[in-house]
Each structure stands twice: as C-alpha cells, then as structure tokens.
Image (cartoon, rainbow, N blue to C red):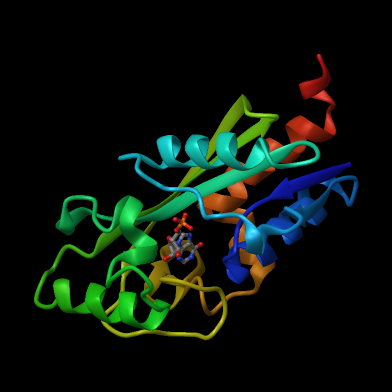
Length: 200
Ligand code: IMP
C-alpha cells in the first residue's frame, strides 16, 4: 500500500519512512505527493496541532491519487506558556533555520529555571478531501542550556530525554522513534492501517 504525505521537511520524511518500516513491516510505503513542488503550500491557520494537521490533510488529499496523511508537530515549553507550539517551525521568522529557532529558544529561556517541555504530534489521515481519523502522541523532556548531538532535526539537540540520559540528537533514529511524539502517533496510524481498519 502507498501512503502519500506532503511534507517538505527532510527530517520528518526520514522519520515517516522509518516508522513505516518499523510499525508496518514494509507493507506500507510512504511517498511524497507527486509534483509537491508545484502545489501552493497549504496555509496553517489553526491554533492547535490537530487543527493544522486536519487542514493540511484535507487540502493535500484532494490532490493525492490515494490515501494521504499530514502531520503537525512542535515543541511546547512550560515556562513560555506553551510556545513555540504551532509556531515551532517559524519561531524565529517565516523561513527560520533550525539553528535560528534553537538560538531564540535559548535566549528566551536564559536565566529561567523551569526548562520542562514536551513535543506533541498529531497525524491526520484523509482521502479525497475527507478526514478518516487522527492519531496523536506526546513526549516530555527538558531544554538544555546548549546543544548536544548531531542527529535528528529541529530542536532535538536541545531536547533532553531523561530516560535516555541524552538529547534526541544524541541517540539513533530508531531509539528516538521508539519513544517520540511522532513515533507514538505514527505507530498507532500504521498499525491501524496495517490491520486494514480503514477498509471497514
Ligand atoms: P510543522 O512542519 O509545521 O509541523 O513544524 C514542525 C516543527 O516543530 C519542526 O520544524 C521543528 O521545529 C519542530 N519539531 C517537531 N517535531 C520535532 C522533532 O521530532 N524534533 C525536533 N523538532 C521537532
């Protein structure tokens, strides 16, 4: 089975493909939507991850030759009232790099003791402009004072996960996927799809 996605984030795409391998044993292949580069990007105007995931899934699934999922995710920092939240990708500006976002996060947390945070992910599955289901996951961690590790993407070098004694950028993609917000949401989605649940 082919499952389309519409992300242009290389880090996410790598994790989507790893999740398909890990959770659906290769029975589901994740492909980018054909001609994605020529499709105007979907607006993300929701105030929650779920709203944005659904908005993207409905928009892109109208243009997909089959089943499609869209995912919205981000980092919520308690001391910042849940920011950057749905603005995680564009925290430091509309086309911000991961480095710029991480720098801004460290600036905002300078001198703040409570560094607790969580990653949240919502995946929405749709076909032909019709929403089928959503799946979600979250993982708690803490924001370090300086980056560690070179794996992962986004805020991973700053996201310290206590049970590993390491940041998400210091562990393998497989270890991160076993516990991450995205791993939890995608595990549910792939297992549900692999069980043929959407056919009923
Ligand atoms: P989206 O593409 O609008 O969902 O933006 C997601 C953003 O949240 C990414 O660009 C990252 O900044 C951040 N993010 C989400 N998941 C992760 C993760 O697993 N690791 C690091 N950063 C993440």
